[in-house]
Image (cartoon, rainbow, N blue to C red; front, top):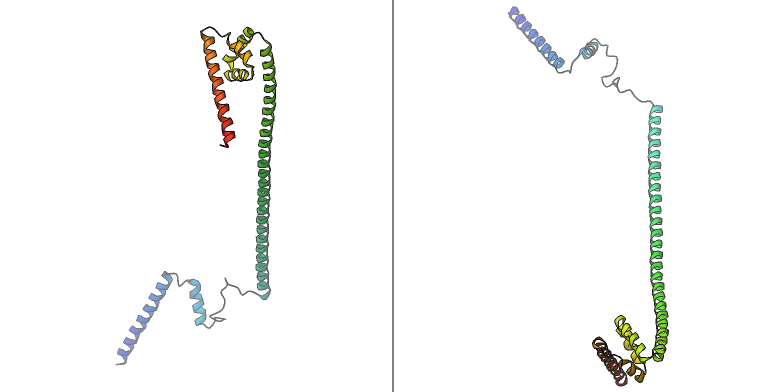
Length: 227
């Protein structure tokens, strides 16, 4: 009976040993167990742990108060530096925006001045043209008066030659001249127009004089009737 119990106990011890070895092999295989850990376990079993299981590992040393204060001071300095950098950046952006606004205002003023100068130039040019037109009209009027005096003084045959040449250049000027001539003088000149082309000039000239009289009469009628 005792031999049987001893035999069973031996078998159980062997099984436990095999199980422990198998479990240790598994941990070693997956990297959860190495030589250093085996040494630590053995030291614990021997009562040589020398410290608490919750002690800090060598890779995470406990910081002293001075070290904590130093790290805190560094963090505060970095925060202050970041704030200064942000303030400088904002100041630079604000300065750039002010410069852009100032340039835009200068551009607007320059454009306004340019428009004003352009408008003034157009007014001056229009005034100059008006003055030139008046001077030209006066000069032309003075020249017309002189021409009228000379035609009145010319022989009808000579005056006819002038009228023919002037008709080829400006029919309106000849019509205006005959409107100002005395009827007797104009008649003596018209009598010199005898051949084919000259008779055509005579016909057109008399027709233009008639049209001028009609227009003058119509204008006078409108003035008298208030139309």
